[in-house]
Length: 510
Image (tube, rainbow, N blue to C red; front, side, top):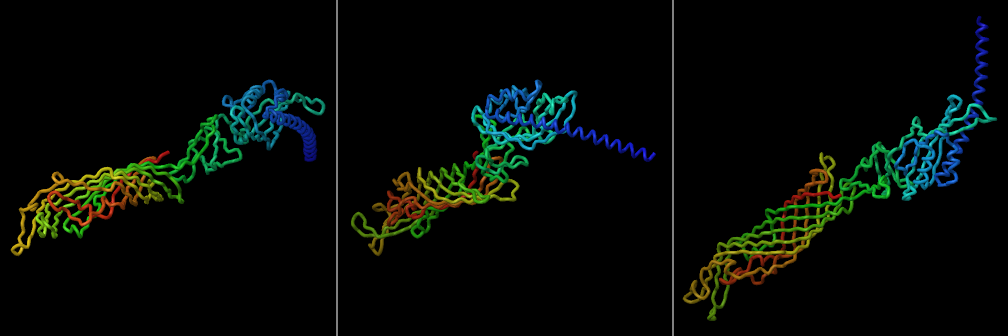
């Protein structure tokens, strides 16, 4: 019994080897025919891409009557990604494409299968396309598809080969990573930026672009890692094919509107040696509109050139008393000592100026802030024009004369002696002001994001003007008689000085 089992096993092995040897020969012949069809397909399709019109008939001869071809012609916007007839494929290709080249790689032949009286075999391969649109000459970036050709042939051999070998279908090899392309957009990284979309990194290649399928990817999802806060990535697709997106990195400028106040200001300081009992105080406020041009970046900090237009209001207050005496000659030619006593003295001087500041501002990011925050340091200079200057004053004046008669007699009701109430209403006086000013400014503070593209800035500022309000009076005397007055401002030799608090609302421009 054991011997019989061994004999049967040997017979089965012999029969198996005999059958296998026969199928190997058939497989080799079938694959040979399939390779011939594939070679004809490659040769013909390559010539079609180069608009070789006489290849049209050879192309159609490759296919069976019911054949379908996957439309991989990217410039076509009507049937891209659909299965169409070979003649439709040829028509679309002829109308839309001026091809640069196409390449084939990694051919793989499947095991033949029987379907009725036909042998069926699939040829899988990678095809890379480099298209040029025939309508607008736009060059398309490299695109590669995993494709598969279904080839059928008669089971009955004619001589050493199989007859009637035709292509039944040219499709996407979905099992090997083929991707159906029905919609797409093209990224043109003309500035060689470091672009990312999802987990994909994009760089500039030989054809200045990257083709991305939709809806898997979207143009608005493209970004730059660690983008500077004052930069933005913009895209434009205004070319003849709206699916081409050119990405640019744009430096964003700033527009600001500011208010500032200096509760305690100094400036136009009067001569305390001449006017020791006159007190001086001042305040200033102003508004500004400015434009910041982004000019550079230093690591993560951003540098702006700020140009602006300021309207500044400055008010100077004087009060107190003043006394003086000096030798003089009266209208009769007699020498005497003239004594002047001023009390209840008040003067208000208002200056409205238009200034044009030019400054450099550096915004330094604070890394650990919950919302974007920056330290701001700004320094520059300004040129100004004093639009309007107004003054009001009032005081009580007493003028007397002391003569040497009788050991010294003081007259208070003679000549122009006496007590007078004086003000700008009865004394003709106008400050001879200098119209132009210039100076420096310095601001430090913090900037915080309020909302997208909107910031608030709070600063402490210093402003120093170099131009006094008027020329310095020589041999200063506040008043000599009841028709005469000279403002203490005319003793000032320095310009405006103030420390201010500023609040700015900043808009980041696109």
